[in-house]
Image (cartoon, one colour):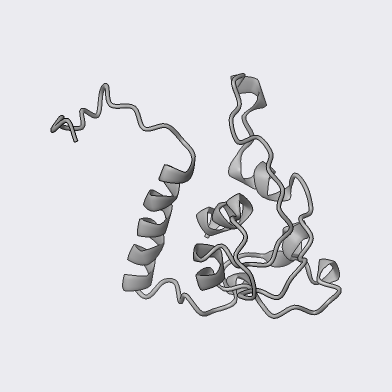
Length: 128
């Protein structure tokens, strides 16, 4: 808009939803390289038994597997839960692994059945 070039030393990109564009671009590069299949169960890429929200014991309704397509479309079927979106104190910043295992999100709907913006789904994609 202002025709100002990005300067790697001084340009600021605030974290948040804009970061997802970089995430999804990276995922699509993995798809192009044949390393990720959008329609495969994400548990083929993650050790889901070590991630409470994905462990079989926490899927009592026996919902279908979650795919990368579900994560990208915000339709993985998790309950909505927002935590640590913006943290001011460096000591309180959690690693990706800590964020993924911090709380067990319930699977409350069949993947692909309903759009519900999911920061947690993006965390899982980032782990892949």
